[in-house]
Length: 263
Length: 263
Image (cartoon, rainbow over all chains, first blue to last red; front, side, top):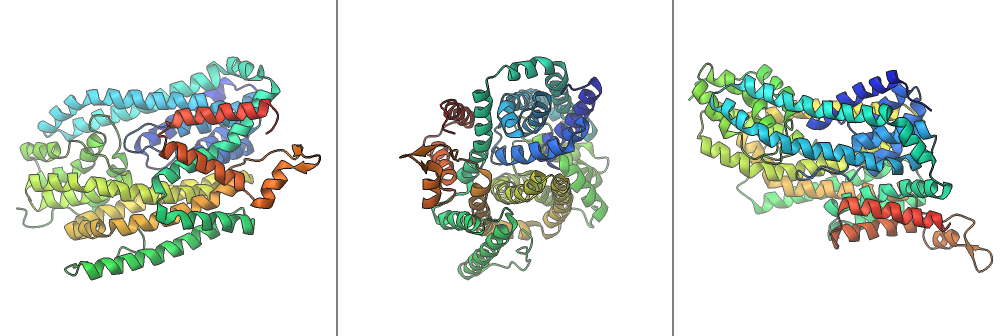
């Protein structure tokens, strides 16, 4: 289906807001689940947005900003998965595979602004020296807006301006190639989960991984919450024991505050 | 030395909101420096009044390299403000800040990005996948409440309990990170069978009439997704394959499998 100019503008506004949040990573509006939902609303197909968001969110789980690196962009992934499924009529799983090149656009914007903002620092230093916090604020918000505007423009071009070219290109693919992207879409969550494991998995944790896996296959339950609650209970036991051990070894510990409940 | 507290609860709450911009103007050179310093600027102004020279020194003291987890930054901001207010040595403040942002980043990543996000995403995606708008709505609500409540709480924790609180967290960071690791890893284990779809079509048979997928299922259901995640894990961890290369490799693999008709 065609995307109208009005829809293109509405999506541009959505992307502006989501990218504004992405720069801060405060409200998680840049995550595919949220971006795809809003995009679906703007396209008048909420169901499509929900399905596209669910598939993409999980695939981009492990692709996180760690230590200042810039990963493939979840915002563009959520946006373009929805848009490509809408314009080309392909299944959302295939659309997610096709949307990967667009996730790189967001990544490049991030790298460009991270570099650009290093150039803002001398002005910030000068303002700090003068004790002018208002000026620091102005510079900071300039950066904040440049980022969101760059995303909005790139989104408008991909979603509206070049839509027929992109759709025609995708629709010229033979069926086996589209199916290949569909298979890739189904495998992509493995990349995100493997990346999470690279950070979290330690030798001592392997039993918990296997326990979570086995519980899910034997219960055939599609809901992760029961496993999460059980995992939380086990983690809690471990934490209490470790803190007790800490207290025994570090006797001179005055810690009276109890933060163990929430964090 | 300030004889009485100049910072009120209202100032602290305002700092919590300003702390949402902690990552604004992120640059490769000094990462979150600008947003981190700006977030404290209203409280600094309250402490130093019209004394721009002191104001400038306090700002400059917080404008060098910092990279922590955005939620956790609020604890540091509360701590720095309380130390500035009681007129403590800037070098002490500076070295504390520099020493603490790393451990806090590790803890914050473990809690928010590697544990909370996979759990919340999995629950909300399963709702969204079934076509319910509650999926993205719960997701948005969870992160909005988290973003505001944790920052208000953390700013107060850093400010009121000061060094004791931060020392308590520092002492127990290892235990907390370990507990979050158990929780996260078990959830990831549970996500593998439900979200990674690696299966051969029923039509693919050997030795006359035996379905290949049937053979794998009779060994262990979801065996192939588990193996696939571990192959990717091994490539990331041991072979240091770059994320983008691996994603492209997954797509190429899928297209080849689709083209020769075995997936």
